[in-house]
Amino acid sequence: MYEPKSFDDLKVNDRVSLSKTITEADGALYIAATGDFGPVHVDEVYAGATRFGRRLAPGIMVAGLCTSILTSELVGTIGVSVEDRFWFTGPVFYGDTLTFDVWIAEQHDETRTIIWEASARNENGLEVLKARASLKFPRRKPS
Image 1 (cartoon, one colour):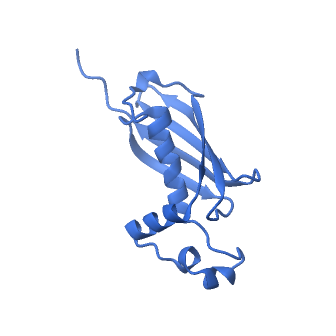
Image 2: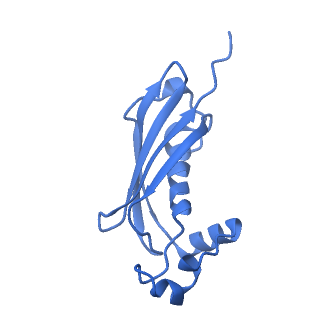
């Protein structure tokens, strides 16, 4: 967990899966830290009148779990994010248990960049998030 890994330690199709239940505490901490007090996240009455019928967990919080899993379980701490793209394909409610699949889709030796992708599904198998992003690794130190 959170080990430094070099670019050369990584390979296309390296993959990790991890499940996590999204809790009220997760949402409260995220909302307090970011100031994202959107009523669909915090107001049960407001959220109840939306097409979702209840409060949603913040999407960017869920996306952040992908990047956390990426660095803690798959690629380590040396790479730096260059670009992140997330698609919110379904609602995430407090209490949902999500399974995140994160993998290395491409590896570019000349730029020392990896492209990683992710998918998150709820306990009913519904995909709720897709991601595609790039990480750049430093050049090797001269010998």
